[in-house]
Length: 157
Image (tube, rainbow, N blue to C red):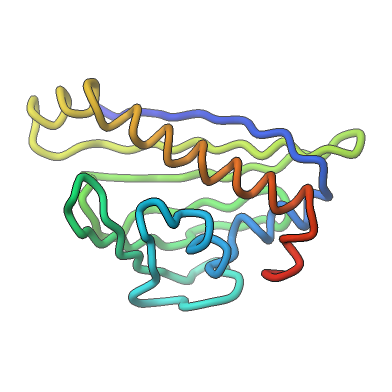
């Protein structure tokens, strides 16, 4: 059974800038310092593009984990889509959408995953994991918004 997390973030910045900061490897590492996410393989810095992969090492639930994702499609500056190649989930897909209107960009995350371990995984998801993942994505989106609505983004683009 798949779980979907859907988030919308309103950002007062141009759509191209929002799109690029969301795919910045360097900014990703800064915006996820709570779980100490670091690149361990693949695209190591700069802006990830279609066809490229990145492997992240991070600590979640006191366990060091690896997650490899690949950007399988990209239509700059409106959409990119990454899919887990290897990691702790049974499956994981993340659609990033960007819609610009009247001076604001709406950044949409549709994060879909499936837990391993059958019934135990589903119970863990309902009790803990969905809330945890929603929090991680919300904190990251808040960081993206804050950087784009200040001059911080200039360090990364």
